[in-house]
Length: 169
Image (cartoon, rainbow, N blue to C red):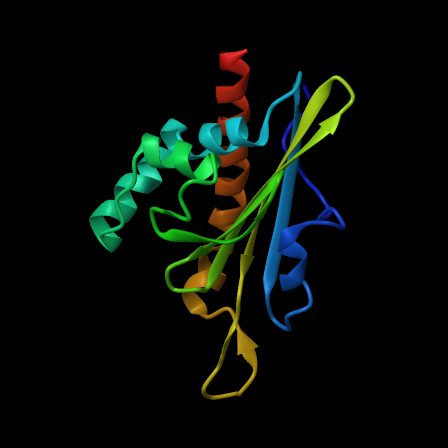
């Protein structure tokens, strides 16, 4: 199985709309898993890994945004449009674009069949705010300082989802 790799955004990605915003940050990571994985399977696997459950606990404690595995399943099935600190900004048959409650970050998931395997994508966007001193778009000190951690964490999240899907097969 290929490792998690930084990847260009696919041309039909719902995350592409953020690449043209001056000062915005976008990323995309991809990997493959053997066999066919449905998009709902991927969404549930991603949001129910032990690593993401830790993030969910933190969001419950700090932001008062609780969530459950059952809600992750409802999100995957298209029944629910909110999950933890996010709401659905857009979705298609094989993609989900989530916006955080502060409307600064986006999380994106996508699956694509790839021969006898399935390509899994995970990406993020951070929308800049206008710096009051310079008037220029800026990610801000907090987002800028956490970017290195974010990149590593993104790889861990996708790796965790991939491992969870591998154990189910």
